[in-house]
Image (tube, rainbow, N blue to C red; front, side):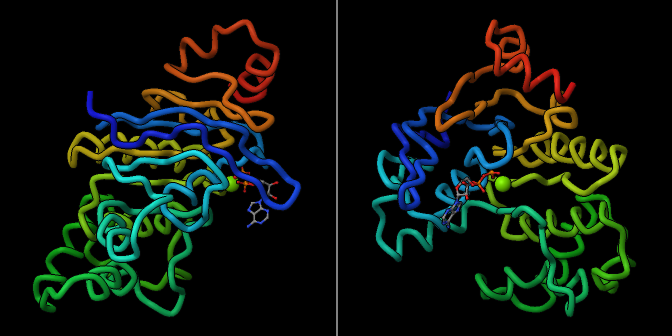
Length: 245
Ligand code: ADP
Ligand code: MG
């Protein structure tokens, strides 16, 4: 199996606050991989480090074979085109229509003409399950579930091989959350994506994840398939899973 992401001895510190004290895990091509753990354990931070928005304090993160902590500006710009990110909150630009939001990365990073951009946006709107007529709506006119789908369509606009999702279903009702997780599964299969999903809420993603790492108190306390993790004889794991499932 091809490793898409390889994290070795990752160390993160903010002043005196040590957040990660040596994380080791890897993510294979085509996997939906969960980074789980309680609030404040450093899930968003490791995701921000992966997408080069946050410097690591030590160790390495290789993505597609490149160490993102040791990379030139030009190579980083090139590497960035390989992934899409849906940040916690998944904010769309409120002054832009859904069409304009989804078209934005295409206008910014490609030289495609208007007609082609319009075709690509229409396709992205379709694959996330929105309707063609939704394109002209503003974020304030649509539901939370539709906003997440539109943010996902934007994250997919440049045809990334890799997708990072930070708490993608937070704030959604359970039915919309489930629908979103099913969409991620469908898109992984349809587009051959590798997906990294950060969550503190295990309930909604238990069926979606192939493998996961659980972070607690600066380290990974368990990793692997969820069925194996859940049967571990470990006090924290048992409490964490019971709270959620
Ligand atoms: P999670 O996403 O698991 O809830 P975070 O990654 O957001 O946790 O945060 C982990 C820890 O790192 C918290 O203690 C947070 O205060 C700290 N932290 C995150 N980003 C910064 C930053 N830019 N500066 C200082 N501390 C930070
Ligand atoms: Mg977070």
